[in-house]
Amino acid sequence: MKNFWISAAITLVTMASGQFAEAARYCGAASYSCCPTTACQPTACYTTCRVERQTCQRTVYDTVQEPQQFVVQRTVYDQTFEDVQETCYRNVVETQYREQSYQVCRPVYETSCREERYTVQKPVFETSFRDCSYTVRRPVYETQMRECRRVVQRPVFETIERECRQTVMRQVTETVNQERCFNVCEPVTTFRTVRQDCGRWVTQQVQLPGRCCPTLVPDACGCPRLTMVQRPGPVVCRRVWCPQVVERQIPCTTYVTRQVRQSCPVTVCRLVPEVVVTKVPQRVCRMTCETVVDQVPVQVCRWTEQVVSQKVPVRTCKMVSEECVRKIPVRTCKMVTETKTCRVPFCVTRQEPFTVTRRVARCVPRTENVNCTRYVTRCVPRVENYEVCRLVPQTVCPTTACNSCETGACAGGCADGSCGGVSAPAAGVPTPTDTAKPPIAPIPETTPAAPAPGA
Image (tube, rainbow, N blue to C red; front, side, top):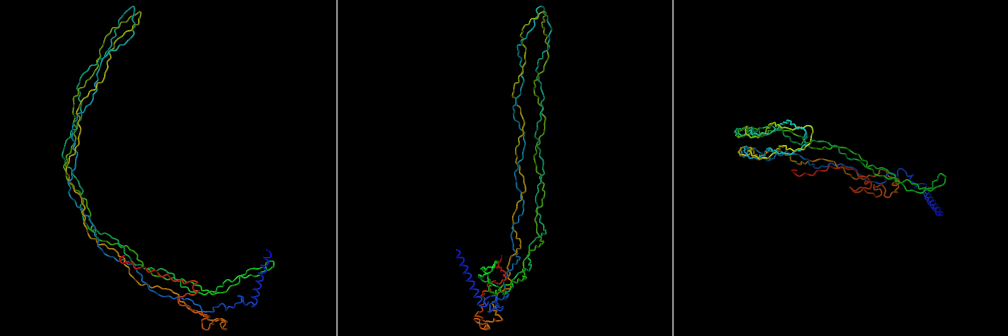
């Protein structure tokens, strides 16, 4: 592996030495650094393009609003009134009687005897009597008549006249001034700025990079080292487009909508309310209160007191207990239910029909003609001028000839202007230098298509 790297280094050094020897053979004439200034001038004719302006015309369509009168039919409703018979019902109250049963509780008194056992002390030696009188209450029943007052409502019928007020709409026609608004289109001209490139082609010299060649360069230690060094390349002429933007004003016409107010007489039909008073007979029922007195038998119970005298024997000395039995009268009262019947008045409402005449409003349609205005769009053509830039090729020949052309060393010579047989291309065919950057032409305004009539 070591021998391989050594042989490769020797080969590179040999190749570099051969190139330097070949360059030194012409005393440095093959180097680019020794090229004279005149060698960089163009030696042949070339084709360039110049800009020509041409004024063209195109048709532009403007939209115009034109008023147009037309007749429209509309439906108007008139209000009429007609009499309609209508059957109504009113309530009539009548008094009727019904049998109603009710229950009454009557007390019934009964007297019974019950036995009562008690112990008495009976004397043995002496017997005496003591007066023990007591009072007894006895019920006495009597029948009395009691007045029962009740209020009864009796219907009284009267016929009165009632005012019936009715609002009727009466039609009144009057003429008023009404303000109407409509839009009018007015033309307004404004200017807008358009940028246009009016540049030119400029020839510039550009140096191309050369090729890389191996060269022995001493390093920091002083030892020669093989390094790739780039040589200067040839100088070529290149055409560059220099833009020049020019602003120009273009008029533009637009339409601005303006609102116009106009006062027009208009016939207005309005309805005025009117009150119509009619008297309608009406039967009225009112209730009159009346007091009725009834005699109702009532059984009354009252208590009477009665003194009963009684002799009680009292014995002295020795008292002997003796058990006695006596009967005590007990009076009980129980309630007995009885059913009675009475007449109860009640009111019955019935509906009585009667006829009422009322006015009913009805709408009657009719058709009338109305004049209206509408705006119809129409396209008006006009001719507008605009500029168009185009490139015209031309051939440019150098003013000074090189030394080689004077000696006849050029291939074709410069005496006839062909310089090596290079001829001008045909018009409209771009040259290789023209393809570097095409000229910027102004964008023409698009022509609007003619709209359909009546749009």
